[in-house]
Length: 186
Image (tube, rainbow, N blue to C red; front, side, top):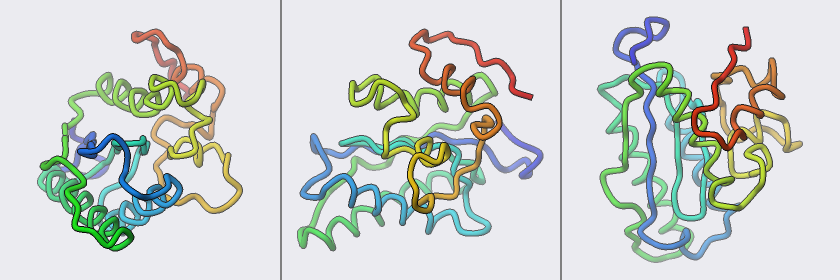
């Protein structure tokens, strides 16, 4: 799905990386979250991709970006390599943290975008970690809603207007029915 707002060479992309372990090795989730956010912030400097949604699970992550189509693969691989490098720095061990290349897919249309956005934020709910997506603290949604008092660790685009109508959007995200329709907010 190309977006004239950014230029015809930009698209939304879903990137996910799975650890080859059951959990992120040796480090508490709070530190893993800091590592991921730091590396994502680094890759989203001016001229880089825009973050639309991010969720860190116990052995994988999901990231929805707006990026130049020609750079999506490179961005995903660099992100995973840099995160691995940081893990190695903390653990003092050489690690193979991710299966390469990271999974990546271009978003084909608005319906696909809605599905991926919702899928990303529903991950901790479907895994049984929380009852509602907005309660998972290793998620950009948690910060978009102001659930944490300190600064948001990522600059996240409010793709579906969480700030404008959080109740309706959260009902849609948390709806267990796979075909729940999203009512336009504007």
